[in-house]
Image 1 (cartoon, rainbow, N blue to C red):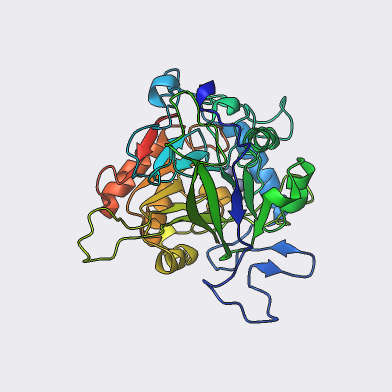
Image 2: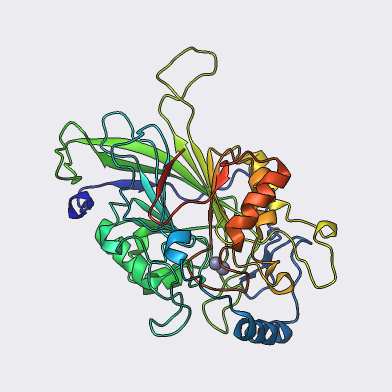
Length: 414
Ligand SMILES: [Zn+2]
Ligand SMILES: [Zn+2]
């Protein structure tokens, strides 16, 4: 694997400052998700309702202790893991998506003509054994990480959805930035934490919902490459440009007892920018439309308390707005797990029924599941999320395989 790891030494990345434009805010008026004067954030929709905090804390604790699901003896065949090959050399005009467990995907955009690879973006890289502040406490993985962080091929961008430990892992971030000099894209409020990880100020880019940046990366040229290295030569690079757009989702944040909702949470859209995109009807067989991707991060869709009917409560309008303003998406990554019991977790975690509704709302053409099969965070049986996803797709008329699950370390092409 070492041959696949580039040094990033000569690579240049240009990032434009975050810009608004997709959704206009009234000058001088605070956006609805910025609450109060103490710099915290909220979910500004009736689809989010909170239980009293003390009530919530004790309910979660006693529920977790009493009802944690058992790990099936044959988990390694139920959720197969393989060493990733990242789809190298295959399907150069496709998006390559490799699942590294939980919400972590490595995405490679199509390879531009004359380059050895496409731009690479890793989403929510939490690759440690435990998802907590200590390597000795907190949930441990029930399935393996399919590769070591050191074996991940050169990445250009790291995109974070929010600061929960199962999505933002200090060790993984530090290793990836050090190895690849990658740039980090995160929602509002995360700069102090990222700087505390010794990530250079200039590599950190912070966004509010609906802000976007254009990123241009110098990729190694195939003209100067040989089969043994992805290293860069300053005189021989090919540029690739893409856009990242920070989009809303229904969740919360916090890494300790006193920082709840002090930083923003987000989903993200990634859009290829081609120098010569196809013109419909031009008959140009070479050109193609730019690819669009959506990453759901961690999200709920509605809030259902005991005694309420799922179909009678309001749903989060943000996903339809994303679909209308930015969609359709060629490929989406959508969370399907950590949703039971619904009275405790529905407001912040999608059930498979919610996930399929989100798939339709954002106008995804294809999707892969995430946020399941890695850590036990809630009480649903471990294999329920993929089983229910299949059922919900069938009920909603989503063709078999359009919203799929994949194995750990597996690469799919879109
Ligand atoms: Zn979370
Ligand atoms: Zn999560």
